[in-house]
Length: 275
Image 1 (cartoon, rainbow, N blue to C red):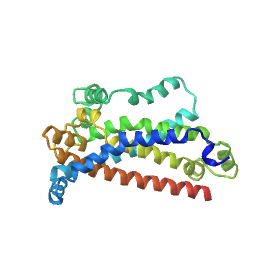
Image 2: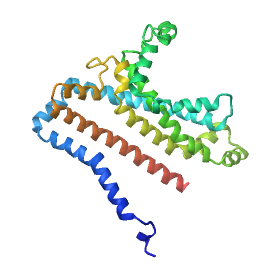
Image 3: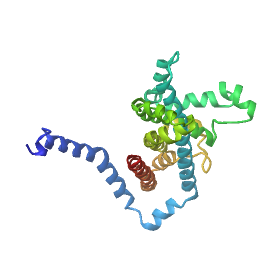
Image 4: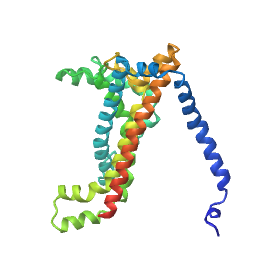
């Protein structure tokens, strides 16, 4: 039997896939490109080199990378704890990990701003003691991005740890490796691709986050204004061409970063396969 006939219904399936991708992805992106092309090169460059736009890009991408890195570290620790150790309340903690998936981002932003503001529970009782302010500062953006990105890391690493053969650790220990050597030489190479995947998902989610950030960021131009908020501001000012120009650059930068991460993942998988 020919290979194409093994799976019945290929033509309807591929047709539905192409129509779906066109309606959801290709047509909206094409519309954004066409709107941007209405600008001359000088107008396009003037928008991108505006000091406020550059500052918003810096705030967004630096915060997203920082949040994704923190989420990657603590997401691995949480996933390791959930997979390797039994403890009371484990099911409750496991359910709480998925809370940011179900919680509206605006609600999350309001909650974070309420507890971290100077008069909030954590802000007044903990942060004020050390002279740290999170709410309405750039640091608040990072905290909000960590909150919405952490579940992606945990749920990406968790199944890999569940499938990991602990006999490999026992073999390394029998050969004289200590715990640190076992982690670096045996465990880390196997979970690093999944960790990078979780990092990429958390980063992509953080770059486009709006609802949870605007309530805790302070939204000060040049200081704590993110790109999605700047795009919304331009849309409210009926500057559609400027908004699409900024959105296009953000799309390109995000795609390049995610492509680099995916290439690194592929290289790590090939390298691990050769070992």
